[in-house]
Length: 440
Image (tube, rainbow, N blue to C red; front, side, top):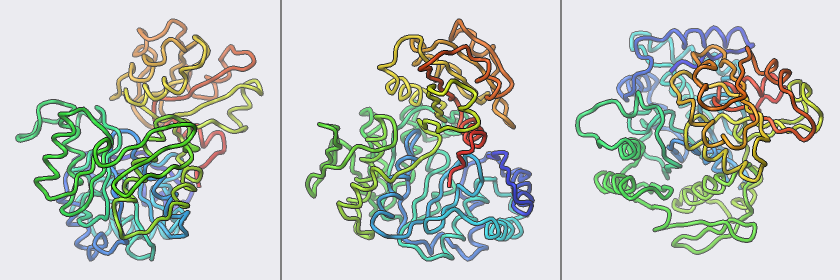
């Protein structure tokens, strides 16, 4: 799926333009093309350091952030592949702790695209191949891979021997891909989503999951039994809870208390717990208790419940206003936002929202409805997005602006105001760039 990637580096932009033009592989799931591309590159995905592979509808990126933080807190080097990027394409590929350099990125993308012109890989497949090359060519102690979409047919699923796999929170998303009719798949949408994510399970490898509805958990357990994976469900083989300001974790090897995550949102404790479970159910990468504790404060995941610091955008509002940005775009994300703002007064939040045209406008607005003072709809640059008409039933004080900056200027707010900018990770990226908070 092309993401309209942009770069200030001319040579990088030239390769990104080539990525954007890829067809007809674009928007088609499957492992055939990525396998053929990697085969021509001498199968770099088979030469990676120990791999932690994470799927999920919500929380998989944060889980990856906690995994990376724990590994690096142990003093080890960690490769990380995530998507999408917020500001710079380079954010997708972190090599041994550092974002990929422009010159190396140019080289890798050119190698992948030159060798695969007749294969027509998708944007994500070509990007995944470039990441695999980078990770195979640079020594590191571990590798963290975030599934792009689904799991079973995602390009990252070419990795055959991870040391641990994990599934974060589940919900309905990417319906056009993950719920497309296919013989032999579960009929219930929620169960189908769980089944698709379970596709990352591998023989002999532990699969750690959050706690799901019984029928969803059952389809994951059945798939693990079919492929010979080790199924470890939260509430059965491991568990975690918040108590007296700490995250209390337990599994077959005992109990562990760690600080609550510095990342904002109660759901981040769940993501942190999943990362801890993944690390403790494998024996290839040794992580101490001290590193697990440090990871709770070290983990960073920009654009998710992110309180903006002083910058060009925040300066458009009174100095004491707080401005939050969150890239969530589905019902689960909306509920997480509502939980975070539960103690805020009714009518105290001004929402600036931009949502892609294929997303449900009510997903974010409805859970927050009682807290909202106004709703301002903005477009998502370079993407088809909803206009104000799509939100007509979700707020009385509704308006539309051409960009976030003008939306902020148009707000009629006083002291102690709270502004939430939400609805799309692409919009979150625009906001971070405009406020000069580029992820590094």
